[in-house]
Amino acid sequence: MSNLAYEAHIDEDDGEATALRSVRPIPRISIQAFCETEAVAGTVERVGQDRRMMKTHLKVHMGGIATALDFYQTAPTPNLIILESRSEPKDLMDQLHQLSEYCDPATKVIVIGHYNDVGLYRELMRAGVSEYMVAPVTMPEIISVVAGIFVDPEAAPMGHSIAFVGAKGGVGSSTIAHNVAWSISTLFQSEVVVADLDLAFGTANINFDQDPPQGIAEAVFAPDRVDEVYLDRLLTQCAEHLSLLAAPSTLDRTYDFDTDAFSQIIDTAQRSAPILILDLPHVWTGWAKQVLTRADDVVITATPELANLRNAKTMIDMLKKLRPNDAPPKLILNQVGMPKRPEIKPAEFTDPLGIEPVAVIPFDPQIFGQAGNSGRMIGETDAKSPITAQFAEIARVLTGRSEIKAKKQRSLGGLLGRIKRKK
Ligand SMILES: Nc1ncnc2c1ncn2[C@@H]1O[C@H](COP(=O)(O)OP(=O)(O)O)[C@@H](O)[C@H]1O
Ligand SMILES: [Mg+2]
Image (cartoon, rainbow, N blue to C red):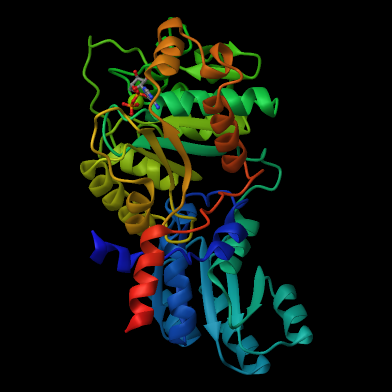
């Protein structure tokens, strides 16, 4: 395990993640970029890898406006063209006028230039260019400009989606998702929707003591019918500010889904509540990967055993790759201190992963069993329990009200540091 520790790095670029936090996903548009420098081309490539751009089709060409001119003599123009140009203002305007002859009137144009010139900016706006950006440009800047053009400013703000998944089955991911959802709804009086995505075996209905006639299956099997009114009929009220999209938890049918199966219901739920908790089963299917990639935050729950560590590591690595511009997934260590079980110590578990856990929750079969069997949340059965306080703290971290508390001494890292210093 010690070799893994060397790979650990916590210096994620949280600045970019923060800059993009409030940007809504970009709709299904086609984008072509024509770049003159590797720097801008590289940044635009990174734009295309962002999860908010997943519905768009983006192609990056090298060669600036001249190449675009050639290209569009025979090809139709897309929804958006991004043009980089190092030309002086006058030449740039001439080239753009030539290009406009081939441009569909509905096509939007963003120009990335190398001259910081107010006169040029005004002239470009008059000519119908949507935005002029001066190089060097950053990835979040480009995404924000694209969002400014294509995301409807009148649209209701999107709720924050948080996906919970276990590093293995049975680690307590669903239990934590439900308790955290309940904490957010009671502590902050904020509307929360819990969606149980484990259609065959989901336990949200048991944990919240509900037996609704309809739920998430209706939405997944009839995605065309899903809108906010329809969603309202599928929701079951569990607490004052908490409602549930319950799983059928029956085996009458099988549940093989397309990659996009949950997109419609998730989009709709995000438009109707400020917080959406997605309770995923421990699977790696096309749809699960899609849901995890597109969620605003991902929380991985693991127990302190080797298989959990291996799985948590592969999941975190993959999610970092799929979500290069987002904060890494959050980690919760659960069922820690089970009697007689040999366990990996929390510090040794988290060091190879390079992330601090949001919480380390003790194994407590009494408290969890009692709440589970009575269909209530731990905050209801044991309001004063330290575990209730832990769920409240997780709720604060996930809603941006509190930061993850770093441990004072990262034991293994400290050890490695000392070894390195001796050399
Ligand atoms: N910290 C804990 N201590 C004791 N039991 C726990 C703890 N966390 C979860 N459990 C229990 O573990 C079982 C599995 O939890 P569940 O949330 O269904 O796991 P998952 O969703 O990861 O499959 C449940 O019976 C739950 O009450
Ligand atoms: Mg579960």
